[in-house]
Length: 271
Image 1 (cartoon, rainbow, N blue to C red):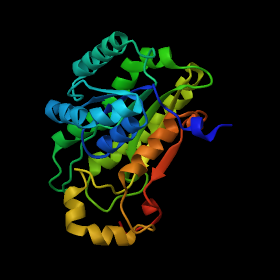
Image 2 (cartoon, helix red, strand yellow; image 1 turned 90 degrees about the vertical axis):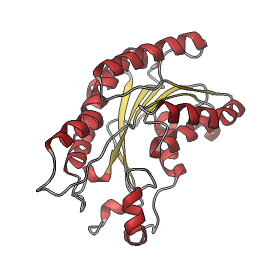
Image 3 (cartoon, helix red, strand yellow; image 1 turned 180 degrees about the vertical axis):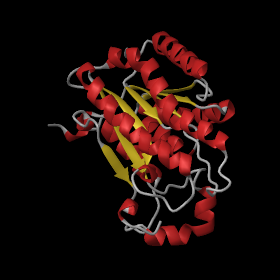
Image 4 (tube, one colour; image 1 turned 60 degrees about the vertical axis):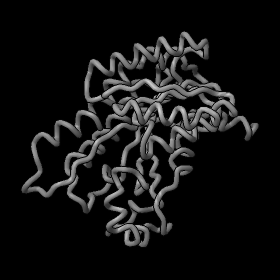
């Protein structure tokens, strides 16, 4: 057993949704620094292109590559277009066949009290955070199977949340419900896709310095840190490291798991 190759993901083709911002950006950098062939998508095309330009020297030094394929994943047709363009991009680049890893990270959140929570928030949040995870996983399945082997399966990695495990103290009804559904969807996919050599796992994130958490951390950052058993919020390497583990040989037998990357926050009741 070679520990150096155990976590090696160099040369793998990886798609990260929402890969230009927040936790997705953290994961993108981790893969780029590891020499993977990274494809990022999101509805903000300028942000995607900016991240590609920023990380180009990093990924080149590591022996990989990075590309942006902007898409609005609220749209079913955009999911189809994304997969079609990804298929073409992988083929034209002459890299390893297929898609080794799909990271379903793109998401939306909506906070409001129960008396004013709008109906349209449910459509927005559940579509992106849950339904399109299934859509994109389904559409990308031929590419995933193309890259999969018995010893090194293709991977579905879903970025969930501890709010889908515990009852959150904030009024984010659609978000917490969507993440709980995502965790169950991942387990269902793990069972059905395992025989096709595609694994499905969740990384349930706690507090990280992302766009979604910005206002909360600005208002109550010190309190939140004090309530996390490790007394801090997540760092980029925490999110990236968990994804690299699941994408490597080290995580090849992990299927249907929900890994809490939260510093122990989900074990306490106050946040």
